Image (cartoon, rainbow, N blue to C red):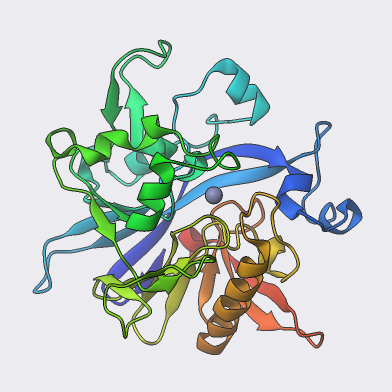
Length: 318
Ligand SMILES: [Zn+2]
């Protein structure tokens, strides 16, 4: 585990899946990406559904917290999806990972959702009877508050043709109803300017919003509008949750941009800015989908690019 200030941070592996390697690496030729991310017979590469559990004891700042950042893709899938995405819970699942730590889903006090794509928040809800697609939908975390950018929340309710298949309302619509989910969803307006020039304001002079002392978010629009990047810091040690801005260690290199990303030139600049700060602050960079590592440090290369190094498995740190 990793200790940052008063927070204890652990990786939760909630399962694995696979996506098309060509879509994951955009314009980068296969001979370059398949060295680190070999493809199967359908050209899919292994991906993890990894999230973070951040725990703190009750103290003068507030009550005890068991926070998640994202929560995997859940179990509301038909057999054809299990096969198409190679979804595999034989080794890990959200509930079994929580159980290992003596926790149940009801203990989760907050979920910081980076964005509402299914592979990040499918785990927010489940079907009472998983084999019946029309059985009642229930919130997985009835005692948690959901933290999401308003920009992304709105987009998820009226997605474009490009990402309609990724925003499935069955994953999040229950969280707009306070009576079902116990704690009201918090829609955030972190300062940012999106690719159309539209600016969101919360505190105009602050580029980051602090959700909890030492836990802040900043907004990235290149992958999808209103995605939030999470930073946990005590001023000495820091960890950045890269979400889909930098989904695997291979994507640390600047031109490695996914075909899924809605605004590639925007993401190019966002990546450079984030990676420069990560290098300057010597932060850990956490990967939600990387099959090779949980997190790493980053360095600049002679060619003006960036490189992942010092891979770590967070749960093996003492
Ligand atoms: Zn995404």
